[in-house]
Image (cartoon, rainbow, N blue to C red; front, side, top):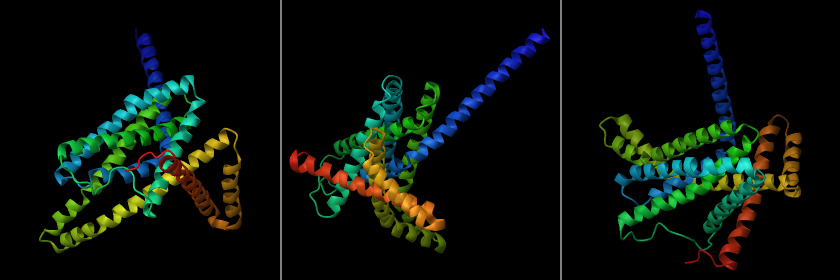
Length: 312
């Protein structure tokens, strides 16, 4: 009996160690995959606050909560099983989906740049009169979840591409872990951002001089933060989207554009000494963003000027 019990405990310990190792593998793979999706995450966090602009402050957190739940559903109920099926039966399609998503990011970023330069605006504007707040809120949430589906698809595709060599179970675990972690990170950050002015107003009304100073600082910082987020989000879209398309073109045999960006990075790394690594990375990111801007501008012209889509 003791020997049987010892053998059973030994088997349990082996299984536990294997499970722990598997969880550790998932965690490491998820961290690596999540870092590669960072640019899209920045864009997601930068874009989302606009969906509660113009609405009642009391509705901001409930709306963000609805969008977060929709985002989680996008990732876990739609994209995760779809990505796993694709990776099992048609892995060659992943690179094309990545490039399609990258091209969409380029288009979104380029359209924002073109609008800032005076081009015609497309889609909903914040100046529109809100006649039915309930219907408007529902439409705003639905639109945010649709946009999130595209950004989440890009995040999941990048993640899947990073762990393509792993087992099916590990891939599933990594996709789920990255999806949940990024949703919490993005929408937690968005909730803090959109309520920062309320916190600042509350502190500004306190009796403590330090609290009032902090509150006034937060109120002044809010417009600057939103402007910075808008710029960072646009740059992130162009950089990430352009980089994805450059890499994808290289993978399918069109080496010219990526070789040009790689060549510029190598020249800068070799000529700038100790700062070569950092400056080389920035040069590649800049080339990717420039490529993304050009590609996105071409797509925008085709959609709005040739096909006449999205015009008011």
